Length: 433
Ligand SMILES: NC(=O)c1ccc[n+]([C@@H]2O[C@H](COP(=O)([O-])OP(=O)(O)OC[C@H]3O[C@@H](n4cnc5c(N)ncnc54)[C@H](OP(=O)(O)O)[C@@H]3O)[C@@H](O)[C@H]2O)c1
Image 1 (cartoon, rainbow, N blue to C red):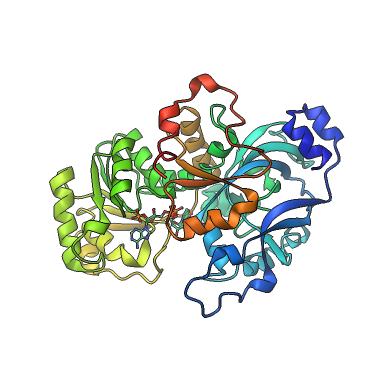
Image 2: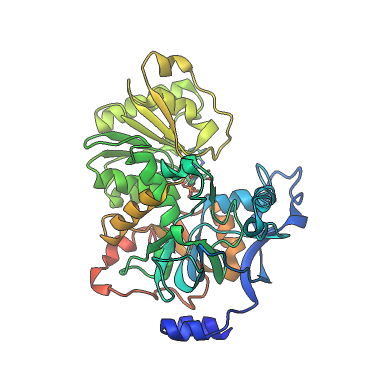
């Protein structure tokens, strides 16, 4: 372990951290460009074969960036996409960024350090960083935005932006990460490193989809149908709906997950495993509509979508007249089919949503800091086990979020304000796994 890593673990002061040299190499979970055709023609692209953990060279810092000593990270579904090289190898994104300028060229490497969430300690700041300092304890918002693009000033997500650790290199599943200062958020003081690292990407994405003026603009009393409600996005969506005075209707894939939703405070739960036929079948849409009206009393104002091809026809059907289907993904396939008569005759809207801008990420981090929204951490792996951690998400064997310890030597560290911990709420998904 380097002197700098030892100093971070010993809670060293900013001056002591600055006195330690930055090591030349770092341990990181990474993909190899040479593996990009590894799974060609295979039905089960097992991410344990493509995710490697080993040393890669330490990148240098641009003036608007910080070097973060990563205490913990978590698995997002984008690491399943990148580690399967589908729908396209992420090396294509790195090559495009590499053509931008000299700073972009750093990203175009034969290895891709992945991961889009992190908690940790700032150990170096670039010359242009003003609001953050060495020693700050932070979490990372995943939108990597070029603030020189004028469009980003209306809404960063409609401008030149990339998903950090997916469309950029030097992501969070590593002992050190390179992050723009405009991605940093204060770490909520009552959370452990691994709890804090399991929130930002999914919570901020769900916040934009449901609450933001750029998403479905949920109001008090709205009925919100949430597919995959016990998953990464879903666990935050349910909490945001409850916290905002809405009525969540959770769809989950097992009786155990249905029970978890009840403990989270969700009174209306559908177990999709118990539906009489497949979700693509219009007879199922009608049965589901009946079930939702019977339990929640009305059709959904909002349908929270990312499940894609499998569910999209049902989502467009199930939203009430004038309602909104908000989507940020296509887990089961991106060539959606739906009956357009239900959309236009009933004046529904489909809203595309992607990630979250810095302000939206800041707002949801504030809610997490206030304890209104809780992490949904269910299990914790070491960085060396990142293949197993990602495989669990690939196979839908998890609930909530799967954490990964990087520099943190064991779970449970990093809490500065233990009095504000609601241990029962924080353990809800752990005991369900
Ligand atoms: N654009 C963005 O900014 C953004 C951000 C985050 C995530 N995403 C995308 O959103 C998707 C979900 O991410 P996540 O982190 O929430 O993943 P996750 O933790 O794996 O959760 C997904 C949930 O989907 C449900 N599901 C899986 N297959 C389904 C099917 N055929 N029909 C209905 N439900 C199904 C599962 O729940 P049950 O089995 O219990 O039903 C699972 O819990 C991924 O495709 C990801 O890439 C996009």
